[in-house]
Image 1: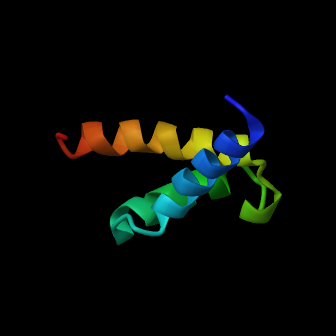
Image 2: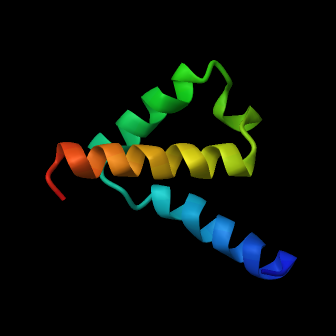
Length: 64
């Protein structure tokens, strides 16, 4: 995948978080806080990985 395509993909993934429900974003926020880093200091890869991990947890917990 080239740089442009990866940039767009990462932006879409991160931007998609804003469209999630409040329960999801609150839980993801707790996961981010558990890293000990402010959200601004996470790398793009770290943020996307946390989001993917939390998405799996959230979907299992909510039967999706």
